[in-house]
Image 1: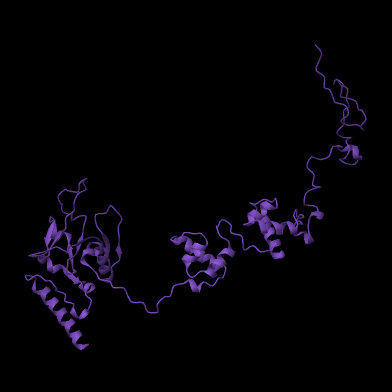
Image 2: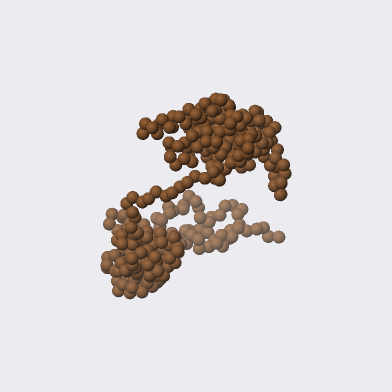
Length: 367
């Protein structure tokens, strides 16, 4: 079996002389270049380098000086592929800038190209008032509708829009402002001193107003109030001096022969909502804020009525903290705190009520 021979491909070093191979090394068909006698790269003429051109050349890149403008600040812009006459025709035949781009055969999604086209349109002074973009009406149509109409309903009708569309009315009015149009003749005449609306509080809304009245009273007392989220069993959280207190708000407009009657129990959840009332846990509720039909305000600790689901409020007049009956009065001179006070109320409560009534009458006499 013949020993393996190392074959040197001839032609790799065309100008180099053959040198002797090491002793015992089989000589092939090529030449062996001595590393010591190798020439320095690029010093023996063109044939020392490969005649094949480089794959990546910088002769066409913009790094050579001929591709930069003055001061090498930015590349010179490419010549336009469309003329001013073509731009004029495209603007007149289109209803948007993207339509112009399509007419010129350009990329309609290129914001930079659109800016260039718009700049040339401004230079030529082309009219673009008929452009409407995604709108169904143009600026020229809006100008004509505003000048020929007497109300915004007529403007919307002239533009082919729904009259009862509040959002479209706002959109059209905003666009008219952007165009600087005068639409004062479209605005309704506003009276200089309109008559105040006739508002009359009604006790049938007391239940909805209870939590707001309680929060207002605590805020006027200087305490911060928090409204918890569901499913908390209490209505308010009040930052009192002794700490955070959980408050349940209750209201009543049920007046019995013995006085104001209120239910303070809670009804467990059921499909028919017909389970009997159960009392609140005193460890869950700290105070009951109660408002009766006279708008008298009670603040009762939960442990004082633990286990009860109904109360006769005449037995808890010692817990009355104030009265908001002035909210229902049309004339402050006729306000009496004890408008419907029970006969058997405590003497302290009657004394406060009579004092407030006398002071109100005195202010009326002084006036």
